[in-house]
Length: 165
Image 1 (cartoon, helix red, strand yellow):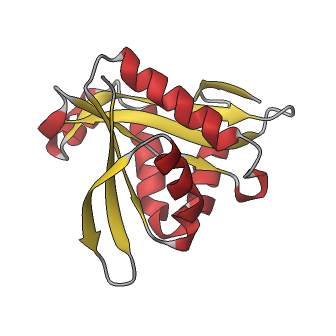
Image 2 (cartoon, helix red, strand yellow):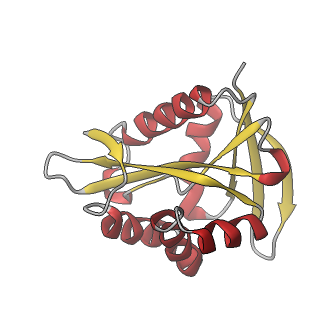
C-alpha cells in the first residue's frame, strides 16, 4: 500500500469510496472534493471563507497494489481555530479492506501532516453511527479525546482532539 496526494487520476475513486462509507453525506462528499479540485479559484476561496473554511485543503489516498483507492484522508483549517488546529477530512477505509493496517497508516500520515503545520491540536468529528464504529477504536488508540458530544435524532456527533505538542 502507498499513500500519495489526491490527484486527477484518483479523485473519482476517492469520491466513490467516501460516498460508499458515508452514504448519508453524499452531497457533502461530492461538494468537498469538488471544492478541493477548485480551491485555487477566487470564487471557491470566497465561498469556502464564507462557510468558515480556510484554504488550502490537502487530501491523500491509500492505493493498493493495483493502484485502486482503498482509503482517504485529508486536513483542512477552520477560520474559528486556524491559529491552533487543523481538522481531519474524509478519513475512511474501504469496508472490505479493513483490518489490514490501512486505517492505521492513514491516521499516522494525517497526524504527521498536522504536526508539520505546527499546530497545537488535530481535531476531527465523527459519529456513533454504525458505519463509523470501526474508526472509534483507532481514534482511541491514538489518544483523540472526546471534547464534545452533540445529540442527533438517531446518533451522537462526537468531536475529538489530539494534542500535538
